[in-house]
Image 1 (cartoon, rainbow, N blue to C red):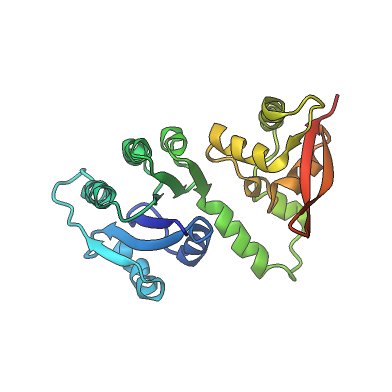
Image 2 (tube, rainbow, N blue to C red):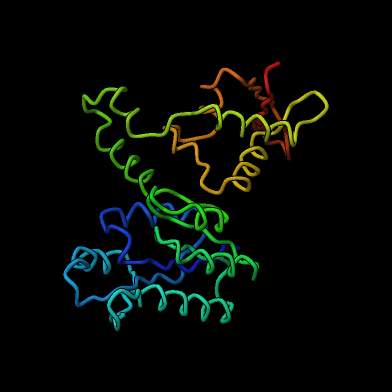
Length: 248
């Protein structure tokens, strides 16, 4: 059975331009049965959101700013999340915000056994990122969209490199240690398990941050690992499994 997700969006904190890409990404992890966005809809800065809400079946929740300097939107979103949690109607939550105020909420939802996916900009504070099971940068979704639009354009590879993070020695060390953690006696580890453990160690780890749609080509691009494709068979179906190990 497909996971049911509650998608809660901080309208004050997230741009509207990539709502379609966000919802397409969320659909990979489950069925978004609840979709709500929070903000003071009397304010002009939310006008761009209004035109895309109906198209994407997102329910706007009105929250007036009662006191100057206090974020009533955050409070409303947190209260709703707890109500949804106790209703037991969903298997997980997607919190769309770049605000560290949702760190405690993400932690509480996970303590209750719910899967928590975060989506926000790269400016998102580390505490909120690590409080989620998985955190996706909205810039990745923007870059994917640009890539599709400019597939036949003259944009050079050099320009595209500027849009993504560099694979640093720290990233390579993280991958290498993760392979070692689950490797067999010969040093080989199933790449699917490596990816899962990387996600647990660092919720914002995503090969797309580095310009690769999948982990396999990212690993192949680093001259520190061996990659092996093994043929497997189950119920007359043949398929390939990818294994990886650290080079000596």
